[in-house]
Length: 219
Image (cartoon, rainbow, N blue to C red; front, side, top):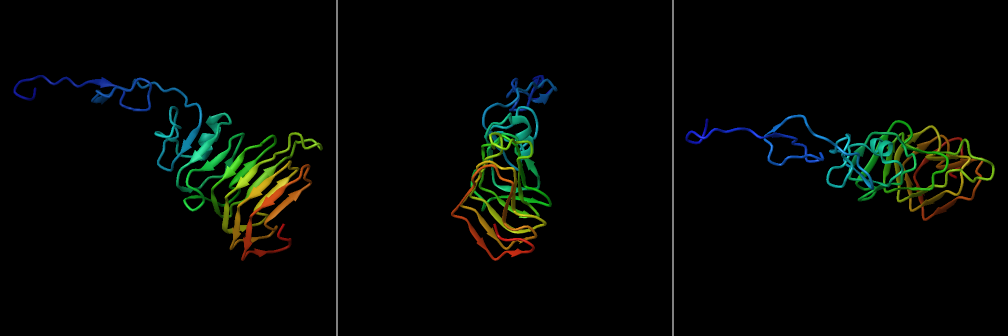
């Protein structure tokens, strides 16, 4: 009993604002929260939460991989931060919100792997560590009809130490690489390398500077 004899009775309810049945008047969470799977454009932030119901601009998820897994091919926008994850992009376009100066993929293996049938965009990241992009068209036909044809733009490959090329493609379709920087990297397979391509690839407005390259050419 508080406040001069007034009986205080706490309000039970769901206290998670992401939940469908969020009760803003609740004082004690009673475990009754219900969530709906997020649909539409997905958002990622290092301080987000990888759980059902999250993925909106206001309530983002924490990892790019979780967003890809749950998004069913929807576009994914990534907030500033350092992400230590290797990402199989599925069918999603993955774009940083504020560009490569603010959004970093720092990994010891591939940063992004792109598979058959992909026609989306990867844009706006710095890749460092031992990171690289693998465009894997294994399984496509000789016409290139289902081979991956990504657009890779506004990327920075900086201080990478890679046993292969920084962008490596196998049985690719029509790949576009534009407005990318490759600087201060050490590779054993060149900067950009395609094996058995089925389409025509385009490289536009890219800068390649101060790299150490062994056993291969630049492109």
